[in-house]
Length: 95
Image 1: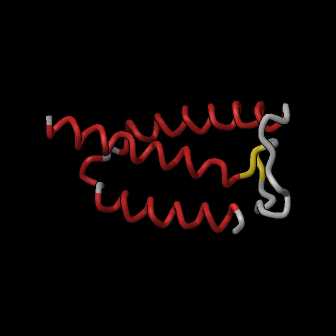
Image 2 (image 1 turned 90 degrees about the vertical axis):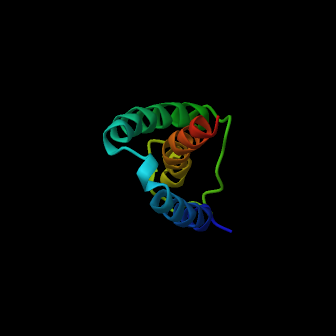
Image 3 (image 1 turned 30 degrees about the vertical axis):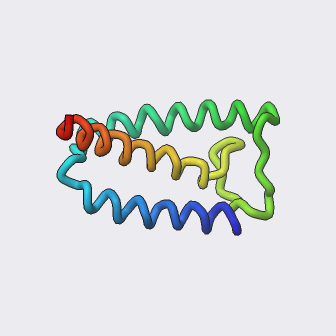
């Protein structure tokens, strides 16, 4: 399995989840959060990949990179940006 295929499956599941949870997600705060999180992901992923702490098989990535970090790495940041606030709102209401 390639990282691109894994990323695509995560993004499809995220799209379905995001659509069902759209009433819990407010666009303006998410946009600011996304800017900060993607910047931090770009910085720290490049550090850990550049120093050799983490390595990716070059045959399994798409080849699109931001610095050393493959673009597939950013899907999990997007997942966190969508899932964490909606879960927070769900658990806040139930308590």
